[in-house]
Length: 339
Image 1 (cartoon, helix red, strand yellow):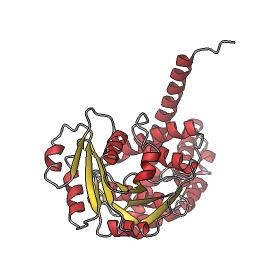
Image 2 (cartoon, one colour; image 1 turned 90 degrees about the vertical axis):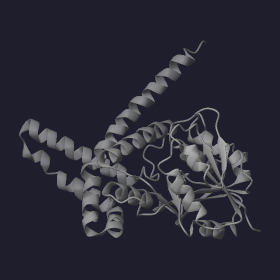
Image 3 (tube, one colour; image 1 turned 135 degrees about the horizontal axis):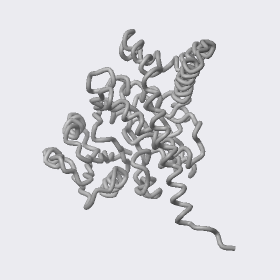
Image 4 (cartoon, helix red, strand yellow; image 1 turned 180 degrees about the vertical axis):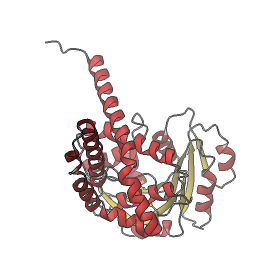
């Protein structure tokens, strides 16, 4: 059976990348696929770019978020198979062939996920750091991933419709995590194929890298506290990152105690913290080296250990405050229980 693939792309003010995304798709001939772009009320000229390509354009009536756009794209699809990607992702020459390899023998209760290429489309230290970090984090538990992401997600259209798609009244991000957790509870299997890859356009600077880390951590904390899985080894919210954050915070606190007390003894545990961090994250550091060479491996490791955790902790603090605020609002709306 030849499966018909519907490639679904949500777009919101993606004029800088959507053209390159569509160009990468139509660079390869495939008669058994369609391309659907669901535009979430863009205001930046995206529509003019999208209309240059032979794709189906679905326009939302009001700005509703990526989940609503993906759901709308899927609702207007014809394929028996849905392939979700993002507007800042580029298909590779073997992306669709890898998907079709799975579809040839595809259990009905299985989702297929992919990841980013280790090397991003745009050059630069911080983009390369992010692409390697995500590729490593998403593929290290390939046999039993906690979730699959919407930058490369394959699902049967029938299954997607049955499960009612992505949750629309949700956090600004992590809708794919919630979706996959919901499917796992329903008995579905998640399959991560590291060969199913798309190339991401980051254009990261130092400030964008740190803001991204803080934002993602913020919503991870909210979601994890609500689901009581804060310490789970879950994709980019990995055990390595959490131990890295603890080592960084421990180093900062020991330094503060030493300065405040004048006692150098507080500095003695620091090398042990660093050693544990390096050992736990050793495979990630090797991934940095493999992708960018020895110098990048060294600098990437230093950035990961010394700078990146500051943004992670900032996001974690915001997430705890947001979670507590949400709970207080929920309690106030519920009111006291009458006996």
